[in-house]
Length: 323
Image (cartoon, rainbow, N blue to C red):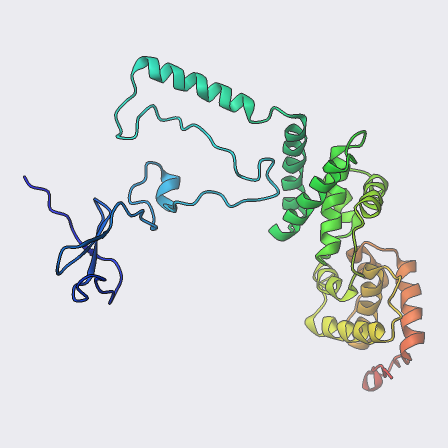
């Protein structure tokens, strides 16, 4: 039985560079690119850029892409490690002989032992395992995780990890990453997710900012409005009114130096009073993770700076005039 290749169109409309008449045809079995008119072989042994045409496991059947895991700073080897496969077969699919199979098993053992040999690799593996756990608990994006891994690697290069807790430093790196990328996660959230004291994480965070010369943007209280409102069960109308109040406060530069969660909670409380939504200061304080005193102080500051008038008890005149 003779072998007959099944030609496939390589590029639609491409012509032979030799005769200029024939269409280029790719033989998927031999990898030859030939002309359908004169038979001129243009290229041979071309690598197929498409997906794998066969799969051996359920995971491979779902994803037959040739590329592996993308490079990531959040992996101790950045995803560049190689692993000797468990199949005892050669390239043609034939089973290996007993001496070769024994040698490959020993190579696998030494390969696994040499993966994490240096102290730095062991440190990174432990730190990034904790980073994955923290990222899942805080529900942050992959960009935040990558930035946190970058900050931790810089701290490890500077020798800041020696003599300090890996857990506290990786938590501080994640908090710094959230601050840098303006992801609304507070120091209290990070402490609760990591099970560490807020004081220890804050100490490591100040160390990272000072030694690595990190430039942190000013926290935007508007980004915390939706989070507090969802926990307190506030309406969309109240959220929009609170955002308008915070934007006017930002334009007047009275929000600088204030806790963003406290400022957002005070704006939401004002919006609840204006929109006649029955929520107390205690309800909003518990949702924001601040005290009622903080909300009252921020409320007084916003009222004085923005010229807010006290809403009257009459339903017809429940409004706030913002100058």
